[in-house]
Image 1: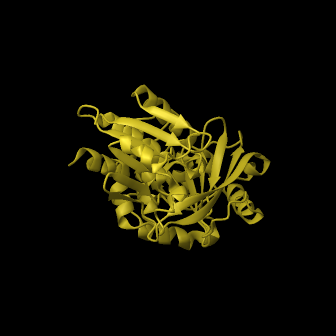
Image 2 (image 1 turned 180 degrees about the vertical axis):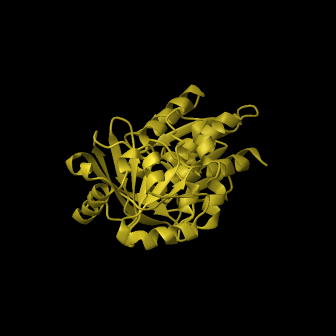
Image 3 (image 1 turned 90 degrees about the vertical axis):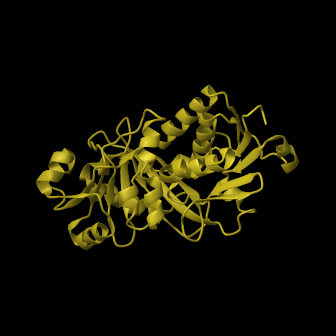
Length: 325
């Protein structure tokens, strides 16, 4: 150890690796973060929606996801300047209102809105939906801005960040007190129960529409979310396909995402398509991220669709191991 300060090597600069690195550095660890890709967030984190929605996620996720993510909005708000705490809105077209009722039965901490209340909350959606669920205690963050800010914060804390650096030989990690593996799918050799879940997204620019919060559009087959970002950008995502296909976005996925945008507001028909992409999310069989320790090696993996939501809690678990308690 460096005096009383543990030395920690963190492999992988996605959201879980960056949040863990910042958490440990704040506690006093001497942190080295290495990323094999060409930039931070080289994996699925770069294409995430960035929704901090513990109550909405309860609709499909195990109870521990909501339990462990209630403080995530506060963590992000305390570390990056781009957090928006305007809640989440869940809507459905008239034919899919049973899906909205089902969503409400499985969740909590929401208000049911009528057309007038929807219009007051999101004026550009006036007259478009008969009912909505509003989750006021949720928020969102622009993943790319947030990851970049965490990298700068980490360097300001005195940590070493190495980008484009292959994973070190295990013999070279012995100089560290702890090694934390946050490499996602690249870590499957040591985590054989991991599987890949494909997610596709599209980024459009539409100055004619203004939204103040993420909107989830419910559909019996695939719920889609639309997240506003700066400069009239909107991210629509994300499919969940049990596949490790690494190709770009498919015609089917693009059609579903574009149809959701148009259903939300017809002005999206004239939106500029800025980017399309696809990524592979690492997931365990129960879709719950977990921390595992073997000696002085810790793995944090299986973030699935909960990377931004659960990284603060899982990083805290890693800190408990490294510092005790």
